[in-house]
Image: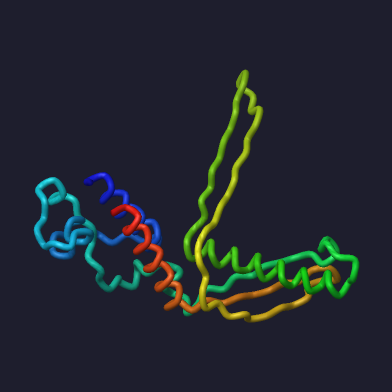
Length: 181
């Protein structure tokens, strides 16, 4: 049980931002108080603590919290769209650019998982691969613009309000905690 609680606390720290606040005894709560419905603290988790939610000083505000909204831009090339009619190719490029912008928003809200593998034989790199994956739900994004850039590309910009970002992260953390229990 102790290991699962530490994993959940690590997930919250990962999604809460990049800044660190010093931990002191007056602002700390035990993990058991956070994850347990009862108010009693088991002895094995008494020494583990995380900072209680508090207003951050101006120097520790994360980049996301300084902006009123997140913005993301997606791009798509018209000529490579799989259709013979030019008008349909343009519509498909707009759709692809919008999906690219949603992917970029999802990366900003939830982060990006990267897996990498390298194979070395006789002190020479034989194979070096990596994959990235993003997963999440974006709700409430606003379409800011769809703009042709150059002769063969569309650019789409989306915006997501900061309050919606915080709600999405809170829902995601709630799902992580529910899976652990």
